[in-house]
Image 1 (cartoon, rainbow, N blue to C red):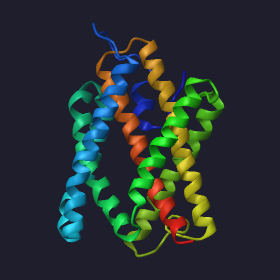
Image 2 (image 1 turned 90 degrees about the horizontal axis):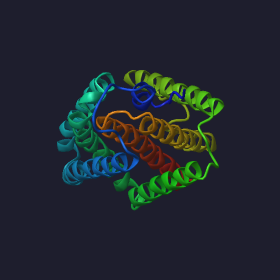
Image 3 (image 1 turned 90 degrees about the vertical axis):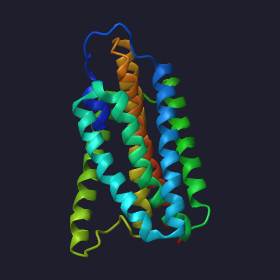
Image 4 (image 1 turned 45 degrees about the vertical axis):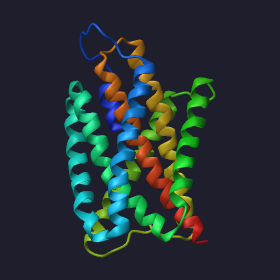
Amino acid sequence: MLRSSNPVLGRALERPQGVSSRRATLLGTSNKAAMLLAMVAATAGITWHRFMLDPAAAGSLTMLGAIGGLIAAFVLISKPQWAAVLAPAYALLEGLVVGSVSALYEQRYGGIVFQAVGLTFATMGVMLLSYSTGLLRATPALVRGVTLATAGVAIYYLVAMVLGFFHIAAPLIASHSLFGIGFSLIVTGIAAFNLIIDFAQIEMAVRDGQPEYMEWYGAFGLVVTLVWMYLEMLRLLSKLRDN
């Protein structure tokens, strides 16, 4: 049995979730993922516009999105049957954060957002093609490796956040040196390989006949990974622009 390094999919898609007359499908999950991404883009446009007019005024919306999105995600992880309501709520809230971050990068590096979006979806397409053709499979070794790598990145980012409260900059994350660029390349790659595991988990959920609400849950997990990868793309491109 696979276990995703994405905490969203890993917890809920690894086992059947009860009896339901309607079952999850790949098409249904794909459609719902597209809907959630559209919601992210919609609210991102709100904070983007606010930030471009007055960066300080966008701060409250960004904070609302960060805190609200985190709460929605934690509740949804423990209550996947609420996914039809909480997944859209998470997408709308997360969009507020994505919009502000995107506007900040766009002000400093014109055109970078378009590049990051293009690279994110291109990477997703490559990973999906690689998975569907069998070139890349979610083998136990790959799952273990990606899980450990993702956990390591999460811990490092958490330490960096704590250090930031004391005005101490963690190395590599913000560094525009060759080592900093290499770090961002590795993290972006880890995010991309999470997609392979997520595809496998969703396919397994469909094969196991899990309930229809798991379409929303699976879509939610994909959006979490895609947003992470997009933000890493922004960071990587900004470092490359400065070199």
